[in-house]
Image (cartoon, rainbow, N blue to C red; front, side, top):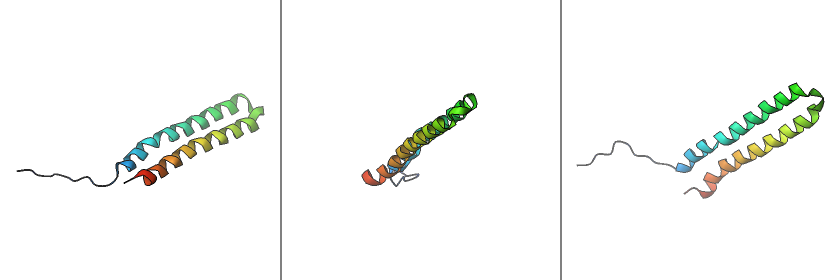
Length: 76
């Protein structure tokens, strides 16, 4: 006699996206942490540092958005 304790339904891609969201989150944290440190060390370069921060943030968030869309594109 065999009993089923719990049935798992749904897509494993959702779990994959949740795990993959750690990368961009860590990346954004590093970008803004190091940017703040650079601004404290060299305040006269604020414009250049800020523009580089925004560019790095955009790339990290683009990766997160691609990761969000891919489970829907390739999900079954």
